[in-house]
Image 1: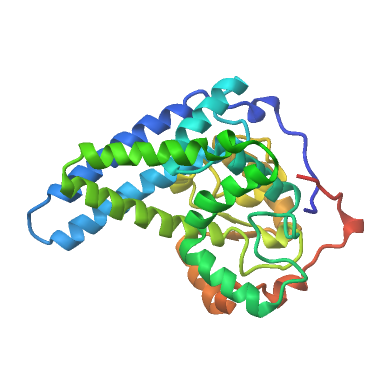
Image 2: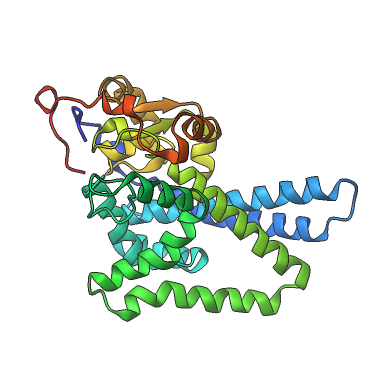
Length: 311
């Protein structure tokens, strides 16, 4: 990353006390949308049930966004409470907390290199292999990363079988219990909702970095001006260029941080767009299968003009 990192006010580095309570709101809304979608018997059932599935999927994505916040230590000021909340969220999401945290922090530290467990693009990989992987990632990247890559990362870093598999195993027990307790219509609709969430999550995640520059710079990061949606369901991760330059800032503060640093980040190549859907279509049309943009590569910043950041 290349940019001038500003010294931010100390208040912007502190976790927001109310953020962790969003999990209860997400779970409540997910429950209501599941019941409504499963039991609806009025006119236009496909439209209403699709809306319910979408609403429920956004709650699931919201829970994942809180897990992302926890991986950075932003969900609670107390480290043990933060980790405990992250472990609980992993039961719903179905992943390993220690594995996800290690993988995600490695993504920040080793962006666009072979050592980045979240990244697909790096110099020695061929365009054909990259294209295939990007296509898969745009559809099922989220479940592959959460269900397979994160536990594998924990085992690779010798965190032990218990730490690596605790979240996934408890998730199996949790969903098995729901399968037994929920009426069949609600269970089927919940499965559909989770599937929609994983698809949307995969598509959302890919536009943060793909279809942009191939090198490690702000030209390979995008931010989205959909702050209402971003705060409701992404805990501020829509301000993704800001998040990479200032990973110590909790998501709810990233909107204010963006006001302070946007011009500087844009000058160093950060891409700004209105929202995910527009960006997804634009990247797909402009660079088939989300391969790096040659025009973005031409904007590679000169390291002599800015101080290199190590996230």
